[in-house]
Structures are given as structure tokens and as C-alpha cells.
Length: 108
Image (tube, one colour):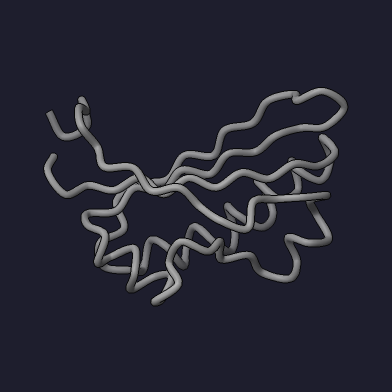
């Protein structure tokens, strides 16, 4: 899938904070907003124990870097973090990573 971009962001918090981030914030607020954007293709939210904290990894898939920029703006390498996230998570990445998809089974 030439041009597909995966945007990756990580956060850390208590198990309860991460659960609330996933079920209340991401599922009910973020995902509907993303699904309304042209060029947004998919999202995966991964969770795992990480020492005394719980780690959450958000991976969104876009059809191009231009779609990412339309979502995140000119400073698209900076994380888009709403104020409520600061109450749910103890810490999070200020920067995101973007990967070009080299091989996928999606859409095969």
C-alpha cells in the first residue's frame, strides 16, 4: 500500500487511567473525530503492563503524510494531546513517530 503512514504515540499511567483513556476518551471522542477525516484509515490502541505503570500505544493509519498534516497541522510531528489526557495519564510522548508501511496484509 504505497503512501500509507502509521502515526505512533505512547502514554503511561495507572491501569485505571489508561482504561479510562481507552474506553472514555479515545473510543468516544477521538475515534469519531478521526473517522470523520478524509484520509484516515484505521486505528489500533495497544495496552500492556510496563513496570509499575500501564503503557498505551496509539497507532493511527493514514492514506498519506498529507492526510496526517491535515489532521495535525504544520507541526505534525508533535503529539495532539487534549487537556483531559493530562488528567488520565501520568506522562506521554510530546512527539509522535511516523512510519511508511512497507508490507501489509490489509486490503489484500
